[in-house]
Image (tube, rainbow, N blue to C red; front, top):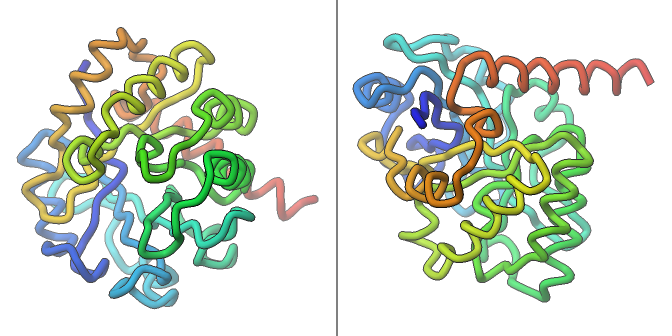
Length: 244
């Protein structure tokens, strides 16, 4: 299975990452990526950019150094009602929106609370991806969350850094892939690179997908066509909100 897109990357704007968008795009091209999502942390993260940063992403060209650049964000889940740290006004203008738990922004609680907030996130029409869901600090009821992704036509991320920076994630990530396979839920893949050299590196992800015998049609980052199909779904979903 060949992955051609990295939907979770960070630039110096995140405050604790070390490369510019130009450096990321160059390295992405060198590593065989055709698409990257610029997903800097939302403003609740210490050192992250102010909300205007996300309102100004349109100044970045759609293609840099032969790589298509999606403009996104990694939102922080800030309470167990499923609230996040950026307004709909900004989210509706973005290409691909991730949301995730970080213990610097929200303290770990119970499996039930983690699960219920994740379900709320996946039901939010402006949010596309539940990112690094395997984190054992924020243990979830995997099947309930995967079913919520299915019900809302959303994406579950398998994150290449989970085995490195979120110790103990491996078992959860494998079970998540298996559950996505069982319920026909689409997966996206993120390097979570905080320096350009990590972009497009998916050793953990590809081994996991191979071990689970994950159908390629459920991994949207294996073709431009599947990515474009999802992005069209997002645009239509948001346009329908304005008509309601």
